Image (tube, rainbow, N blue to C red; front, side, top):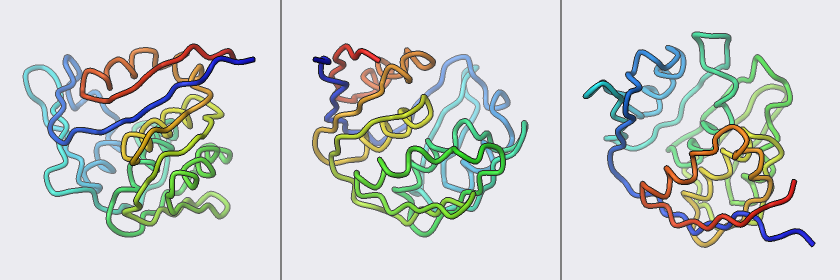
Length: 188
């Protein structure tokens, strides 16, 4: 029998996050532009980047593109964040046609997300509630963590070994920002 997966009763504290030693010019221009359109501001300060959302999240229209465009690798995470933005967002996935494995799980949280061919539509803001879901790859697992941050209740996310393979420090960093989480060992 497998041990229980990662469990989370996450509450994302509002406020400002400082990313040490990573200035804004280290981000691809397409990501900075999409974030700005969504109301997420990246400002250089003390050799790093300060991230704020001063006026709330806004719906966006964005298409993935090769560097320095909007990276396909963070499309699922943006999709998750946009569930909390006011309005209809559209994300055209131009790089990787199967970058939609996170959508069914986001629907379990209560997100209003759909895909037709390479176009993902997100209606927001959605009231997200706890869910028992699985991430099929590293990007999907990260998107589901973000959904759990916004959801009411305690979520269970399976497939976290994907996330820990590439983003091993993410969960402790979220905990340092105030996320209430428990990590149980999971066997792939």
